[in-house]
Image 1: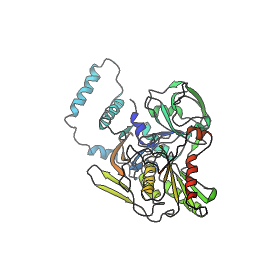
Image 2: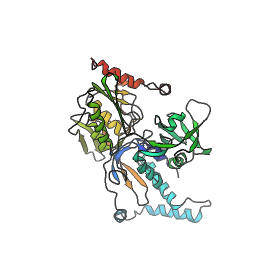
Image 3: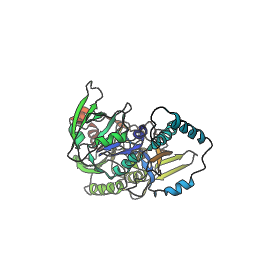
Image 4: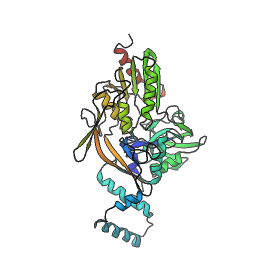
Length: 440
């Protein structure tokens, strides 16, 4: 059965790359998928099961909602709590029995038929962020959050027409160095057609041990001919936080994802930067698919000293507000936030809070638009059901679902800019800060 829902999880999966959900989702392949905004926490990180996460699988940018850690539920207890089988389900079992007895062809195994039935129900919901991951994909989802793996170094999702779409090749990593670009669609791996495969199946082919070579057949938008690119796999280490001082006493901090370690890493980076007495700060959230909600609130609170960070609204109409936490390190320094269409979920929570508080402008392009929250349910066979439980809004009540955040100053960064090493968005951010007179 297909796994089209995977590409929509808010967060991205890392394939030897990295994954997390946005609103959509994406895998990291040495490769990754983004996180979706939702409540969630990987089993091997802060806890073990459901929690809030901001879209990160995303690959679309992987958007995810932001979760809080919870203990993995006792599966026997879960089964014991299940209600009596509804009368309507008898029709389902009657149909299944008829297929088993009379169908001329070969039926999928029972597990695949079960997943197919569940996905059929999810399709009726019309919510691309409520998705089912089979055990293997759920394992990717959990393990890829470690930030290190062997692969090609790119964030990916499932392409609409089949194949794997590259959401973001990581700069300096094998895919990027080999010439793979954002938007490329991988249709063959070592000559094997992957257009009919699920995302997890394709990722398993793309991943591989450090030092081995994989041959990718790529369809590039605007190019009439297919491309063949060889990539030597490597150990991929995705830095969560990068920071440095630029010219003119401007500090720069790039955040790649919102995991359980991100808040402390951001605080450490801010302490190191502020020690050098910067006159302005650039926060780079471009290509960040999201992650944990709690991490988003904590990080936004480093820049926003008061008011709310976001508002959650549930289907019964009640709301929950997340106020800024005390002790922010950078609530006064002149600030600019860089965003693009790969900024999703938790990234949008932070950017939206900063924008609504008037702390600084957003520069770049419109963000992904992942404004929902998902709770993960690990099922008894190891599969993972992500269920949308709420929508979130910026402090001023803006709904970004499907729309994203509009930048205050729109600046494109083209493929040509990337190839030439130019970054007009960063240049504009520096120009803006200098225009405030901070360098005088």
